[in-house]
Image (cartoon, rainbow, N blue to C red; front, side, top):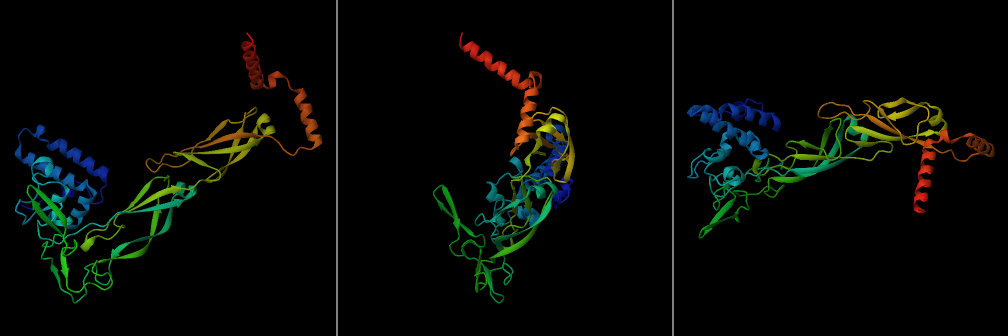
Length: 377
């Protein structure tokens, strides 16, 4: 009986992400768990199938293999130890990752198939401005990677060359040797892990099937990203061996320091200088945002270091569309390069002040006096 497609079994689309897969599995597992079905053999088998589907689709590499090869990716035909799954954890009778993927990823000598190895994942560090991080953008990047050879289309052989299964490893790319109770596995010395014997290797790639090449890619940066965020470009990594799936490209974001703003989560912070007069008498000032200028009302008698919040002028979250705030810290600026007349006016102003005009200074001086009085006791 043909197996049901794993995506259909879980009731999800082929583009489903990890959360959707997990959510679907939990829902079905609760419905068909043996503790709930009370000995119903049909539902028990259904539960095993659900486990099987989840174990494959929740693993990035296994899912990639399944998407390309279907159920045959995990069959052990011709190995003498049965096929498919069963028993503990949905994969009973197998010895781990390489056993499960023996036919595809080269666990030596089981199925006699050509060794196929998924391409490597790549990393690219991308530096962007704060404006680009907040609003989103598209950046052109260039990566150096392995791509399938255009001359041989990844086969590693000239057009008129014979390609045969390696007689030493029978196409697995690996050989096993038993020494007493121990079994060791090594790369086949004849084919160097390719699983095939090529009469005339391709002149362009020297039989490798892959060549180094620089590729240009356009990367869409979603609004709201921050330093350390990673963007996964599926299939944009290095090409796999023998036509296997390519790896993924991970673009790691680094946001440059900004001349005005500092970012903390979804909020932006900046310092805004104001004059002594504006701080004392109050008024309106213009403050910068990433969308332009906005007016901020400064109340009379504002002290340096006071924070003002401008709602919704921060960063919009990539997760829930929540917009952070812009938080402005005002700094009262001391005037410089005063003329003699200005100095005279300030002295007159200073002489006109009394204690009630400087409550913080008065309180500080009172505290200092008490401190020294206590030292003398």
